[in-house]
Length: 85
Image 1 (cartoon, rainbow, N blue to C red):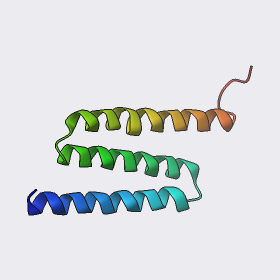
Image 2 (image 1 turned 180 degrees about the vertical axis):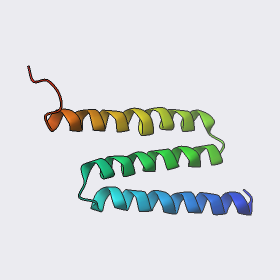
Image 3 (image 1 turned 60 degrees about the vertical axis):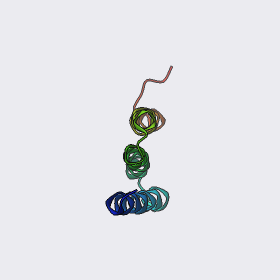
């Protein structure tokens, strides 16, 4: 690993920890969902940096994309945004 790769990895790790702290501490649910999605997206970038593109694509698609969408979908249903049968 080169120095640039190491520094980028450390910056991504610090940003991920920061986003995780925001997701835990914030009072707004939409902001917490977005922060959790950001943690997953930063993990995907870190996997690319570590030469694991297959894991990165899976993390980006499932962890960041689908999970964030499902959280917002469920939040809308719980808050009364959907039809009740």
